[in-house]
Image (cartoon, rainbow, N blue to C red; front, top):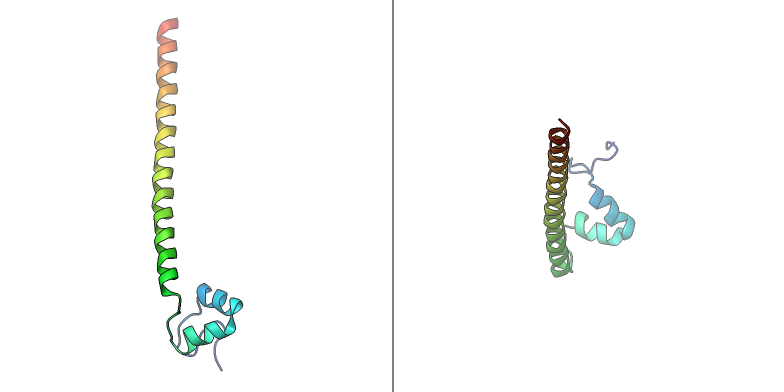
Length: 88
């Protein structure tokens, strides 16, 4: 008897496999059962490149947002120090 969630070759079932099966059981059979490559390889590669670019943009955006917060905090501290200096 097979363990739950484990394929016949001993590998764990991935979320991608589940999504593939939910979308089209025949596609899952051809791709994972028969080992045939998908027919839309160029589209898949273009999608991967698109997501890679988006990931790079998101990381750069996060870095810039964090840098902006640090600059604002430093400006607030300098303003506070200037105000304290003026009142003393």
